[in-house]
Amino acid sequence: MAGVAALPWHAAPRTRLAALRARGAHALLLHGPAGVGKWDLASSFARDVLCEHAVAPARACGVCASCVLLAAGNHPDLRIIVPDALAHRRPGLLAEEEEAAESGAEAAAAKGKPSREIKIDQVRELASLTGVSAHRGGARVVVLGPAEALNAPAANALLKGLEEPPPQALFVLVSDQIDRCLPTIVSRCALVRVAIPPRAMALSWLQGQGMDSEAAQRLTEAGGAPLAALDAGARALAPELRASLLELLRRGAALTPADIVSEVPRTIPISASVALFQRWVWDYFSYRLGGGLRYHPGDAASFEALSRHWTLRAASGWVDALRALQAVADHPLNARVAIEGLLLGYINSIAAGREGSEEG
Image (cartoon, rainbow, N blue to C red; front, top):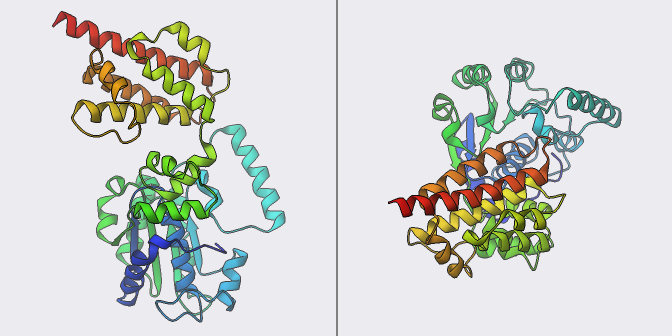
């Protein structure tokens, strides 16, 4: 948790967090779209609360005993609760513990993917924090997220702690999808929304992180979320591959299976390719419904030609196929076969729409 940098668009939600804490709120739920830094804000606010020299709403001093313990990743009055799949968010480990964790991770990998759920045993372990007095004599803080990852038993166990909070305990929950959280948990938390920042601010920040020429495009593709744009930049399709896939999509009704087989490479990122296809079809829906082109402003002619053959119903079926593949994109799949299958589905959905309109 050391070295959490302040993000410029967090000023307002940070002020609200401090005000709620000053009024005695014991449970806070940070919510908003993915990629705006909610976890960073929750982590840095936990540092502020645990700092022994900070005077609200000041930032943590970084030098007191509590801050030193936080920097070392072993503060006794802090618990980080995340799914095993997000274990990198937990406080740092000592070298020997890292080796043990790596060995454990390899063993887990042999058995299957790390869990994406927060389980009841993780919540029950909070008793070692909330059931005793604070080691440093101040607050005890739990940072948990994503809250929607709590499975049913874990959510019910956490609910008991929120209903009868121990003295000086603070729960800071984080959620990308608040509508998927248990309503009774949401109702017992003070809600703090972290919104998409102004575009100019987000672009300035991205450029400060070293993303320059493609910052505007990546930010648009990420829906305005700066951290998602930064992550997308690191995992982006190579420009040549991106251009090749877009050219296949632009051919629309003229696209053939031979085109697909000859132009889809042997190695291709599934998730990034599916995301590109999704942005294409979202712009197509927008075009058909009279809206603007958000991701492909220069492709109006392509969408106009496509609209002569591709019905919205057929396009919706392709959207379902995209969603299904994206859900398993991190599983061991033959990437080339998977992407070729999606593009063949694109051809078939256009043909199905055209046949339906002719029959009508």
